[in-house]
Each structure stands twice: as structure tokens, then as C-alpha cells.
Length: 294
Ligand code: GDP
Image (cartoon, rainbow, N blue to C red; front, side, top):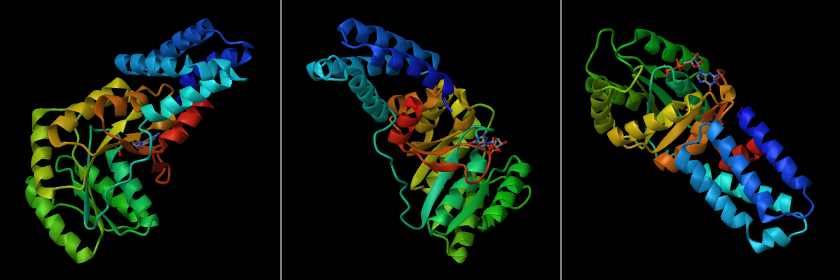
């Protein structure tokens, strides 16, 4: 994960640690390299610029320069700023029962898989999740959710074949959910290859009816800046409460994770790190920062 970024940073910091007495020039050179590494990792330009300015301000501080191990101090400054950039503290879900969680995103981002992963996680946490299929375009997506629900061992609502009215489906699902005595309802919505007006209109209608506690965008980390702009679009349409970033396992760069919070203002709440149902977890900014720094 983020291996090319980690390798580049590692080189820069190794050089910095090797310098006995650190000068402002050493720091400036290192920051230039870090800025390049961030841009190569597909971090949004202004995010990288601001980040470097913050690190510079703190790293140039007298305390850092005068410390016994200035290189180490600068790595610490970088680590702290990276944690802040990733969102600071983990942001929990609003699970006030019966909690409604709406998952949205483009096709292929990992939405349906993530619905299953989230249900498993919530079940392990002692909640009673229910899965609700709301993709009325792809019968295969409904079957996929039903299969996942079976694997996880949670009830799943599937709309009648041929049904095209999303709000009607949601109404039936809510009535069904009452009988199931669930505490968290996870709605898996339809995606498209790209954002289009119809998708947005339908999602808005469903959102209004379901009135979710959480509206989470499922976005593919490996798509970098595209994932960030998708998040901005969905946020304008329905107001996101957070992001689930998938496929971090296949992302060598990390630009989406590093830019997402700053650009959208929305917290990353979970990450997916593989196809298996348990390759999923709460997003902890500090842990990711440490992993990036190796
Ligand atoms: P949807 O169209 O958004 O519902 O996407 P799917 O849930 O069908 O997932 C698309 C593909 O991505 C499937 O092959 C999933 O197994 C895969 N996938 C989902 N999440 C992850 C992840 O975190 N890591 C990896 N490597 N693959 C994932």
C-alpha cells in the first residue's frame, strides 16, 4: 500500500537523518523532494503546497534545529502533519438505532462488497445489521448482495423483479426491516460508470425518503484525484457524512487518501484493503501516517 510514496519519503528522510548538523538549506531541499513525492503520488496540488508550507513552518522552528536529533524531529513534524491531513482522529459512525446508512458511488468502486464488509463488521460489534438492495438496474448486483448477506449471516431485502420505483422499494424495505428487528439498515444503491443526472436525481429522492444517519461514498483509492472529484459531486448532490476508501491494497500512490479530507472536508471513516470480507476496518489517520512513514 502506497509503496512508491513510502519509498520516496524513506529516501528523503534517510538523507536528513544522516546529516549531523542540520541547516535550513537541508530542510528546504528535503521539503522540495517531499513535495515532488506527494505530487507524484497524485496528491492534489494545493493540498501538497499547503501541507509543505505547514511542515516548513514547524520544521524551521528553533526547537527543531537546536535539538540533538533534528532529522528525527522533522520526521515527527511530518508524521503529525500527515496525521492531521488524513483527518486527525478517527470519526465514528452515527449508529443511533434504527440507523440508516446509505452507500453510494460509481460502479466498480466496491460498493456492494463494502455493504457486506460493513454488515460483518457491525455484526461483530454486536449490532443487528440488515442489508437492503436498491440497485434496480442490475439484477446481478442484487444477487451479489444476497450472496454476501448469506456469507455474513445477515438478513437481506431484495426488491421484486422488474420493480423500477426506488422510493416504493425503500418503503417496502423499511416495513420489512421493522419485522426483522434490525438496528442498522445498510442501503446498497445503484452506481453508474460515471456520474449522470439520472443517477443523481434518483439518489436524491431515495436520500430524502430514507433520511439516513450516514451517507457514505464508496470510492476506489486507486483512482486518485478522480475519487476526490467524485466525492465532491456526490457531496453537492446529497451531502456526504463520510467516505469509505476501497482497494488501498492495490494503490501504490495514495493521492486519494491524502487529498480527500482536505478537499472535501469529509472524513474517511473506513478503508477496504482486499477482496475478502474481513479486509476492512475503521480508518485511523495516525496509523496510516505511520504506515506511510514505514
Ligand atoms: P460495485 O460495483 O461498486 O458494487 O463494486 P463491487 O462490490 O462489485 O466490487 C468491484 C470489484 O472490486 C470486485 O471484484 C471486488 O471484489 C473488488 N473490491 C472491492 N473492495 C476491494 C478492496 O478493498 N480491495 C480489492 N483488492 N478489491 C476490492
